Image (cartoon, rainbow, N blue to C red):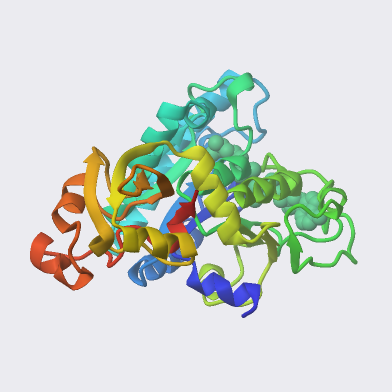
Length: 374
Ligand SMILES: Nc1ncnc2c1ncn2[C@@H]1O[C@H](COP(=O)(O)OP(=O)(O)O)[C@@H](O)[C@H]1O
Ligand SMILES: N[C@@H](CCC(=O)OP(=O)(O)O)C(=O)O
């Protein structure tokens, strides 16, 4: 299977859209373009993919609303423009998703929210809850309260950190170029599109050195850095032209568009390492001997039938520790059920879950992709 066709199996995606695209090169919000991305995102969600949107454009839209032609230099002026523009941005996203019977939610984050462990987990729970409710989170930096020292500085970085936060399979960065070129295509007519690389490839830095457009902040340098950050939790990154016809749908179908940047050690291994090092366990499952053996052999999911006891208070999607009956830790993983549900289905075969709970969300207590053997 090629790396591109694997994209069609992505279950959770972060899509970041830059200012230049969203604001039609600074001439106010491009509602028609935004509507086209919403149509494609709605189609993905209907097919079972969870999508978080990271939307820039508040400063550019604020400038347009305030009648300013040049991007202000002073931080408080940028913050004022962002506060004005964010209104238009979220109103437009919400109105467009309503056409598909969906709601959007405004999520404004600062650097501190993602570096403080407790706030990190709170942000993670909120985003997971929104996704569970079928709501589309629209994330931007909380420009009103940030200072120079605590800025993400660019939404490419924010997109990558959100991909880490929700353990996305992939980060799609929509921009005003077709992808990453070997040189800045604005300055070099013979620049060639890079199709696929490893995110840690050192050659990418020289290629991306050309700076940003007039409205954007980061240029390609921050996109390459974002791909490296996203790779830490196993996510691939695609840098791609947001004006390409049906770009999101075609990428999700596995078509080769833009530049694909891949995690160095393989997606699953990176993701598992990330899970093990970034999440605190919230509870414990006691496994019977059969389940312990199956897990230790590797490559298998944990089914409810092998669970003898459940302790702790946890929600679906949180990290729990799996221990043998003698108390030795065997594995850790993201559980598919809340603590009460896990207690109710422990020891039962998966085909009984629906009888006990009245519904079935997953056959596995913990899926093998979400589990690390210790
Ligand atoms: N190697 C490169 N390949 C593509 N674009 C590049 C490259 N080097 C610099 N750029 C510039 O980066 C710009 C995109 O970044 P930016 O303006 O920050 O956009 P966005 O608003 O989408 O984040 C392009 O318009 C292009 O001029
Ligand atoms: N929070 C800012 C982000 C600006 C930004 O990073 O822009 P871009 O480089 O176009 O993604 C805004 O919404 O204007």
